[in-house]
Image (cartoon, rainbow, N blue to C red; front, side, top):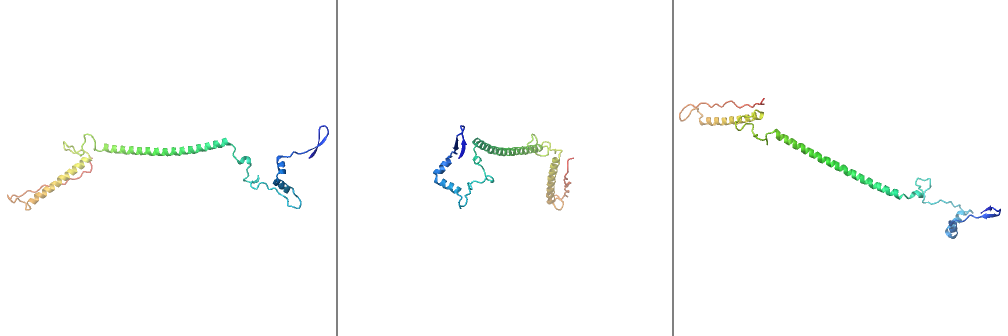
Length: 207
């Protein structure tokens, strides 16, 4: 209470109005006892208000005011969720795009390799005599029996000469086996010798 003076000079005492907590404290026995324990001073230990034991001090690292303890920005929270979903979807699309890219690269690389193999096969067929129009598979002319003026023609001529020479050797062997004494046993005439001729020689190159 304090003494106040009005406009007309009359003095009166102003009383501080009680709050709801004060009025509830008078009607609540437990609150009244706690208030008396706080205010006692006679031969008893003084009461020290330690505050809420579950709430850290303002200087503590884990302290957070109630206004910041709960997220009240609903629109911002919804936007963050949308952004997070968009980021996950974007990462998924990037990963799928990369997988499709490497898969397509492998497919095109396989197609190019197959094309190169086909081209090499076609070139090999074109360089050879197989499958060519109006061309035989031997190294000589089947009509004139003349050998081609190429290395293949020389090789073919050498093989044919070797076959002829071996046939001549077999003929000589049969001729000599007919009479080992060197004369005809029926007529008694001397048999002439067999001319074998030189063995064929391989020519390395046409040029």
